[in-house]
Image 1 (cartoon, rainbow, N blue to C red):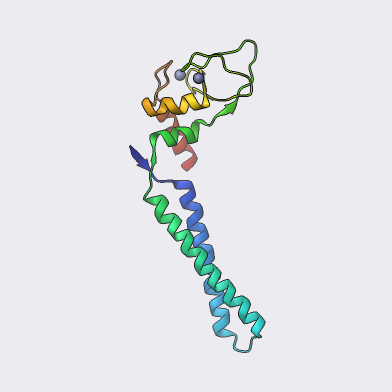
Image 2: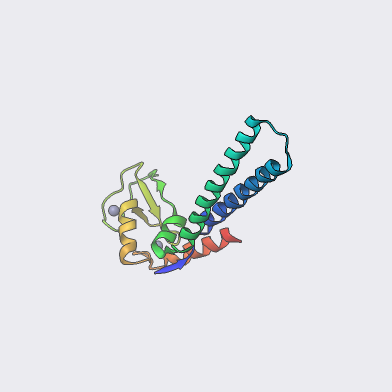
Length: 153
Ligand SMILES: [Zn+2]
Ligand SMILES: [Zn+2]
């Protein structure tokens, strides 16, 4: 299921494209307007021009590829639920997917609704089957989408 474009990478690549495009234009105009410039300066300007053309082209390619490659529900959830390190408080808690105790300092995901904990790998595997919490049944995708919209505005 493909939903939305990769907004963040898209924005930065676009900015890079514009930046290097402008840099290229500046060096080109400098080359054309300044008639009596030294060979060294000319070489530098040519180098800047060529590299900015290459970089802006590369950025443009990134813009197009990321625009045509929307992210999936799973990717969106993984992006916004973010795993954290497990620091047990009083007693150890079990992963609600495999039902085994979670060792301390393991990477875990936490349900934003019921605070159930999951091993990072088990959580990501679970997302292949279902996008809702196996304990409280709330949809992780809804949470991720809400967070995504918040960061967008
Ligand atoms: Zn587990
Ligand atoms: Zn839950």
